[in-house]
Structure formats: structure tokens, C-alpha cells
Image 1 (cartoon, rainbow, N blue to C red):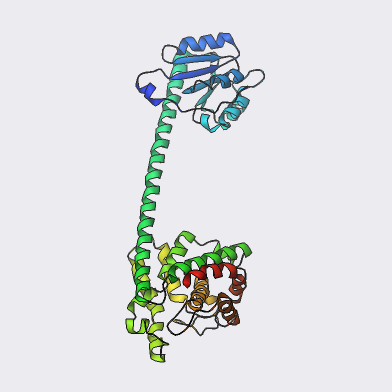
Image 2: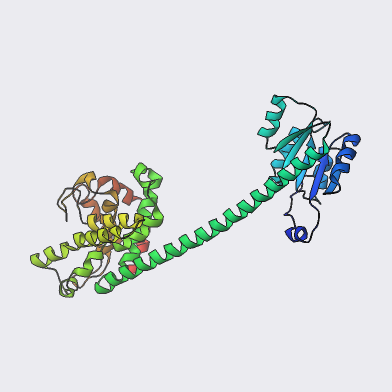
Length: 372
């Protein structure tokens, strides 16, 4: 017995007036002839005497409904239905069982397998026609609803894609505005995303802070990291691009960028219903200069009171600053940058995250090459 791959009905042929097709399966020729004589004036009827022959016929004909006898030798109706519906191409064909067994247990078994109805022998012609008409109509409505739902889903996916593209375009523009004002940080924002991605992958692999990490939507989290220095827009060019180290007063001014950025993103949140990516961005902006020992800014948070993505950003941000050239210093090697960060484990940085960093040093070094 062949098991066909199936094909879609030619809807254009139906529109041209071609009769709907019904396959009748019964090992009793008398029953087959009786059903065919009732249906042939309205439908194109195909009769077969076994389930095996039904599957052979399905290689050529995809019916609008199958009338399937329950009690047949070799492969009974229930077994045939299981096999039929195991092929996704046939799941949409309504199957009506034909039987002389009028007990609830048999009905429930057939319905649980996916049959749409039971019709009992001997047949009453008007009732048989009406039941078949009803089930073919219901199947057609179901197909129409599925097609409509599929169309709506495609449009929704397209719309979500357009909104995501717009969101990312806005993020890129804002990030470019920040980066273009700071002449010393070319490529910083792109590299930061790469560092974060490496750290997050390693955290997932080692299950470090696993409960929280696996709850993150990385499609929002990584792009939102571009706004971590948004507050620098409000800092004077004289300070931001000073060709040398900042004095104490200037450093106090530049420190305000963290809170300025977080506040700006809070204002954005108030004007949007779905602010998932802004929630991440707000934390990146406001927490990436906090330190594990509480000596950071703007809020002097310490330990795990500092949001985890802020603690991650602190590592990525400092590493990139160390390996990048500045007017007042040459770039450090990746090895020296890692050494400096590890020396500050437990004071500036989360010790658990420093252990994660240890597993990503080669990847960090590769990313850092683009800084020079």
C-alpha cells in the first residue's frame, strides 16, 4: 500500500462548476452501490472496497469528504483514519464514519480520532445528503477561516517587522548622534553590543544568573544597549572632547550623563505603550557606572542591587575604553585590559561576571582589533 504525499485541491476547477468529490469506502458492494446511487446526482463519487485502495486513490484524487466504513478486514476504519490524519496533507478532509454499530463507545472512539460524524446503516437518503452537505460546508468555512487567519498573521508579521525596523532606525540615529559628538569613541557602540553578546552567551552556557538571563528578550536588550551613553548629548563639547584628562569639576559634570540618559529614556517610556526595549535602555544608561562596592554613580548602588545588565555593561564599557586610543593615552593590549578589570573584581565589578569574562578573553580580543 502506498502512502501518498497529497496535493491541494484545484479551487479554480470548483469555480468553473466541477462537482465536489466524495470517496466512499466499504467492503460491501451493496452498500457502495446504494450510497453511490444517492450521491451521484450531486457529487462526483469514487467507490473503493478497502482502506488500502482508498490510499491508492488518494494519489490521484483529493476528495471534499470521505465516507469510511468502520468494520472492514485488514485495515478497519479507525486504523485507516489514524493513518490518513498522520499525513498533514489530509488533515483537512472531513471523514464521516459509516457503521451499523450504534453504541456510544464506538462513536466516542471515532470522534476522538478526528471523525466529524457517524452515519448509521441502513441509509436514509435525505438525511445522508443533508449531513454530507453540512460537513462539506463546515470544512469549506474552516478552510476560509484558516486562509483568513494566515493572511492576517502574515500582515501582522510584516507590520511587526516594519515597527522593529523603525525602532532600530531610531536607535541607530540616536546612537550616531551620541557617538558623533564624542570624537574619541568611534565604533564604541557597535563593539559594546558584540562584547555584551559574548558575555551573555557565556552566561547562558555556564548558567550564571541563569534565571534572569534566560528571561531576557535579546532582540530588545542588545539593540537598546546603543543608548547607554545617551546622556552625553547634554554634555558640553568642551568637556566631552577635551584633549586630556578632566579636572574634578569637569568629571562631576560628565558623571551627570548617566542620570540624564536614564531620565530622557523615562520620558520616552511615557509616550509609548510598548516600551520593552526602553526599559532595558534605561537600565543600561543609568547603571553602567555603578560599582560593586557602592562607590559608583549616579545612585551609589552596590552588589546585586545594581541591575545585572548594568553590571554587564560596566565590564564591556571599561574594557572598550581601555583597549581604545585616547588623546591622553595609547590603547592598552587586550591582555592588560583584562588584567586591570580582574584586579578590580569585587570592588568595581561583579566577581561572578569576571569569572564569565575569563571564558571570553579570546573573543573580546578579536572584537577589540576593530578599535585600532
